Length: 115
Image (cartoon, rainbow, N blue to C red; front, top):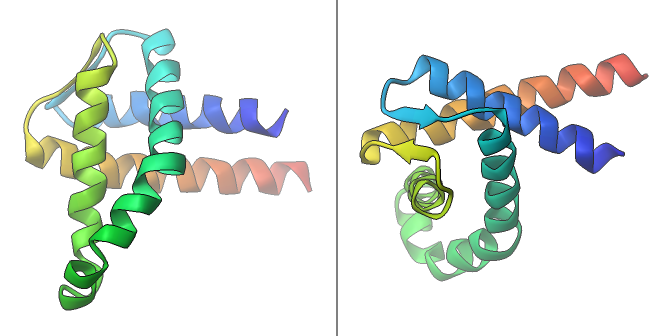
């Protein structure tokens, strides 16, 4: 049950980010659910490998390169999911940050309501 709720909250975060950032377009809630699922899979399987491979760059930039890596993975999700458009790298950077923050807040609120 927890995974489904987390997926729904992440889809809501994607929809909110699309409303706030003009470079991001989502066709509907079903597309947002698919985006949340694809982002979850990418962040689970691909992101750790990329973070390990780019560890020297992240070390030199004091971890700021991870923002770029997250933006690139968010942008790739725009290519993989039909109905989800990310217009440019700056939109992907803002979108990845905003989705992370909104998702973190929503998951924290949900966890607080359950206790």
